[in-house]
Length: 289
Image: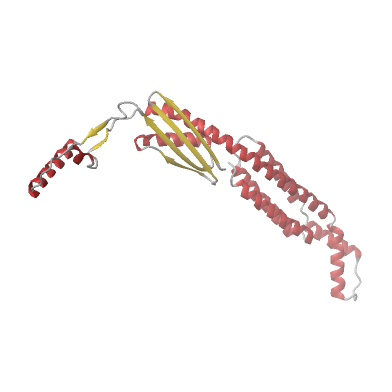
């Protein structure tokens, strides 16, 4: 689910800022932007994030600034400075120039003056970064939960409609026996053109056989069970995105069987509608952790 959070903290000379962005994704994919000097902390930060989140594309931007004298120190590459100075002297002599070499001629040499490489105290830095990252994760989770509540309302409305249509299919299925009997009788009369006497008992027997083959009570019971499980998963505290995906597959299997077993046009139309609603729910569930 999409969300954004930011947290800042400081301790002594160390200041840390964490920005987290979350996007829809089936799996957990974490992308980091971290100062190179603190790159060794990335694995720890990833582990902390993966303990809290199981799905989503997470972009983490971490800024770490140190204001101590050691962190702000610079060093001069004296070997390069002397070599560059000698090269300038030779150039002046060969061209017979009348000019003095000043610091300004040297100051712009790439890499001549650069930040001093000092060993970072990673444990001290992590002690500041970890609670800041945890705070950002907590705020990100709160924003994702708000979006999840909105999605849950939309899904629940669709589940209620599906539940109602399943009830309509159940009522229609209960009246299929006379439909099969009349349909079978009409077909025999059309084929024999009234030349053969129709045995009502045999017609009733064959119609009952067809009704038994077309019985969808088990599929309806399982579909209603899936509805209860779906709602239970949504109401739970544990991440349920993958469970909901599995239940949607089971829903689809039951609906396909119902459509293939019944010869009722009304039931077939309702099954098409049910599968359409399933697809809409599936699109929402892809965003659920």
